Length: 116
Image (tube, rainbow, N blue to C red; front, side, top):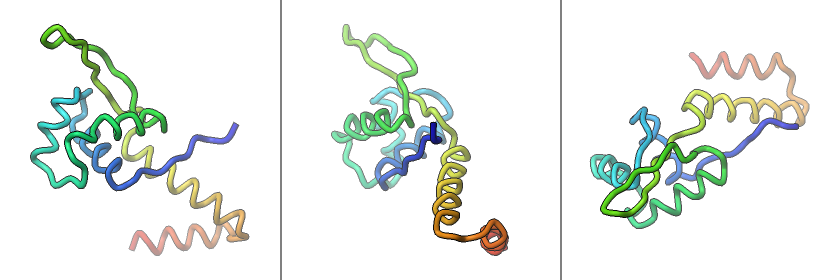
């Protein structure tokens, strides 16, 4: 079975960075509180849409439940680290390059050049 691969939209990336920076599961209210201190391209009412999209991709999962004013809420956490996500992107790019006939030597040279 091939490794899982996905990319994030700009809005999804911003939300994932919020989770990665938090380092702890977040509820909707906590997401909105943390987002208020950042420049984001999404509106507060679209949080549930972004969370659902990230859950469908497998990037977020339900971490737990809490009771607030007789309503049950969920907390969410990332299923991968920022480093894991970046590595996924590099592996996918390397696979595409290999399919296009680019050699491992060329890929290494390009990576080395990018690290300068």
